Length: 141
Image (tube, rainbow, N blue to C red):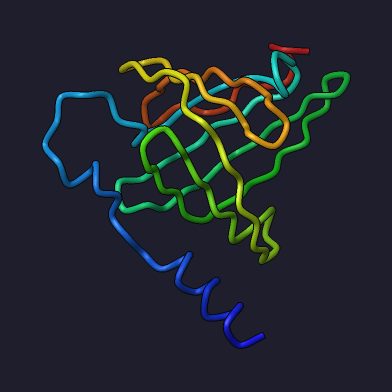
């Protein structure tokens, strides 16, 4: 039991991803990304914030008949090759420890396509500025 706790702490310890340290003109996943769907369901949307220090914060909105259900997640992210790992440490205000695994399919300056490995769901997110807010449900449902 003690080893498991120590391992979890190591996973959540701050670390700057290596690619952030390298000076490169290649697109980076660092930033704010807006997408819709589970997949392609316009009544579900997300806004993910991937910070240069490895912190992650996600905002999620589901719209059912014009009603809004908002949730949040936060934790850490890391990228190794085309493998993105997001470690969820907080899920809608509740402490948790869950690891989500993704495979990056393509990354351009304003468009990012990736796959959630356990279900093979495909996602397509657009880079947005820091002031972007999730649109109201009335616009999508």
